[in-house]
Length: 174
View 1: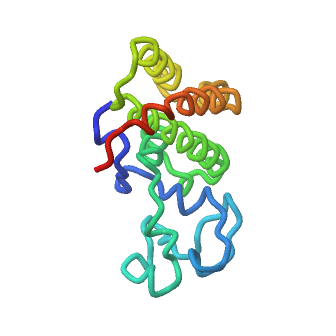
View 2 (view 1 turned 30 degrees about the vertical axis):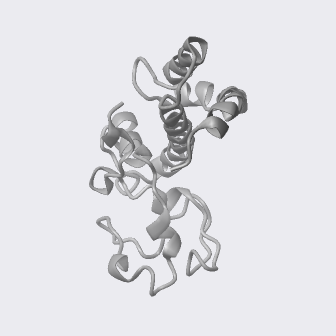
């Protein structure tokens, strides 16, 4: 997993963040939008009509959001570059896959950061095992995500990270 693994590449995504998530009108979003519905600010051919004015139009949440590379991974690896625009039946599975893959990427990022700590051999082995558990051997699929992105997996990752607290508390302040 290189450093670019978690980088957003909107050019390789199908605007999934603008479809998958609900928006609640307030400080972050200028309107209410249910999950699974395209944002009304999307162009029919892709991209945002108000991209350069998102902050002024009340869409600070769009600016601060990062999919951590999940959007392009879902679009390219799971759906071979297909878009919900060409096949509206893809909205639900692509949205679900984005939400699951985003959680997966959160956990992987936390584990990658944890590996930078002075881990014991057992802790290092646990980090490696968990990263392996969160890395599909045969590619990202809906079935794999369903089996892997679970509350039990989250509990395992979070319990491991919590066990590292003493290492963080001893770390020198920068």
